Image (cartoon, rainbow, N blue to C red):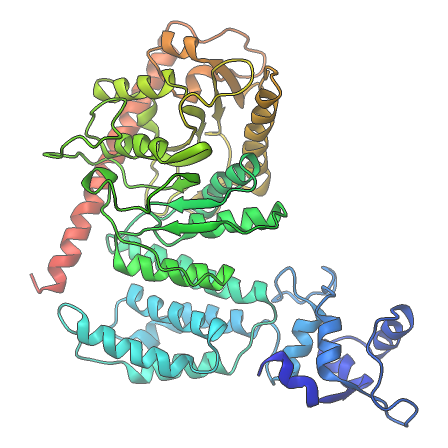
Amino acid sequence: MSDSEFAGVLVSRPDIARLAQVKRPAVTNWERRHPDFPSPVDPGVEVERFRADEVLAWLSARAVPANARRPDEPVGTTYGDRFRAGLTGGTAGGLLRAVERLAGPEADRLRGPMSLDRYLLWLLYLVQNQIVEPEDGLAKAVGDFRKWARDSDPPETALPRRLLAELADTLARTSAGSVQESRAAFDHVLVLWRAAHAREGGAFFTPPSVSRVMAGALAAVRPGAVRVHDPYGRTGELLVTYLDAVAAHGDSALPRISGRVPEDLARQVAQMNLRVHHGRALRLGEGPFTPALDPFADPPGAFDVLLTNPPFGRRLEDVAPPPYWSYGATRRTEFDWLQYAVSRLAPRGRAAVLMPAGAAFNAGAAQAVRAGLVEAGAVECVIALPAGLFTLTAVKTQIWFLRPPGSEEGVGPEVLFLAGEHLGHQATRTQRSLSDDDIARLVGEYVSWHTARAAGHSYAGTPGLSCSVPVPDIVDHDHSLDPARYVRAPGQTSAAGAAGPDETRDRLARLSEEIATLQTRAEAADAEAARWLRRYGL
């Protein structure tokens, strides 16, 4: 039932109190204190009644205070959410609780021989339908499953009609207490599916806290961006988070977003993600895992914002150097992505690319590309992140912020280094996460540096966290972009100099970590190959 269908429903003051889950005097107080509270349709009668749609609209603008929310109600729940759920026979918070049960304690019973990642994918799809297409979600899901079963290779022979019916029936009997709860229910399943998919040899998805650093920084330093693109969209997490950041900054004009995802399954999930969170019915494009294999896979033209978490740790063999390899011909995919990102930026554009930590100090051809990018002024900022942020791997990563060559502003070409390896907390037994404060520190430092340079001022940096380094100094240190080389602990005033025993030991440790990272990537590739072989019974 849509809110407009409540127009013919009348409710009394006791009804309002019961449905909004407040005490009866609270309704009287609302009437006395707020002149815009709806008027009764039959004033003066013994039991006055109000139009339910008008009451709902009024209550929807009033959030339940933190001290009055139930434990199962997410932040942002309104009295209108409670009122609506009561009118439809559900309970506010019911959708999230149902999803947690279906994805947790009930999952093994319901899925039977179906793999966990496949089960969670269908649960994710049904939750999306419940949110955006509540009227015909089950019928559409069954039809889609039949089509998928027929077209899959090899074809699926067992259509789990009982499973789909039970899932859809359970979800149909619940309702979300708020938009926030709907998204929380979808995200709960999405996180579990990502983990299950990764265990099956799938991709490493961008951790939410890392997405928030990348998106928050770009939304702050490049306001009013029109064209926003993710050329390797995974499950759409970066585009969704960027739109969240734009909304938080209060930008009135929504950007035109685009992206592509090489894997069909992840592309479907990405499109669901964008639809649930921002109502964007976006069709993402297809393309290879690295741009050099098809330099024209993305839409033509320049982008105001480009952000991506591309695959790295692979080598490109027998590929003709594409036209954007202006800084060197190293065949490691991470340096292909860096050069491609720079080549697709508008004059005032900015890019954020997630990189392996080793890209900052690798020697050989990689160093030549890094040198070209640095001396052209294309590298703006490098943020080192703590290890353990990703599911199933302790890989160390960095965020590289890029700009068009020659677009540096202010007092001369410099690069901001942020050493964030020490940030974060243990979110689970095996995974770390950046806190809200950590994210605010990293984004705030970059934005402050950017603001100072735009005004023509130098930036002192924060001891132990950041340092702004002139490009000539970076050239003197073999074009190393490792923040640990430049950011000094509080009280340590010496600039980066010749490597001593401690620094040499740190460098060897980082090389060891890179070898471990490449080994992890190789194991993931082996798992992916094994997964496909199992599908063919090999």
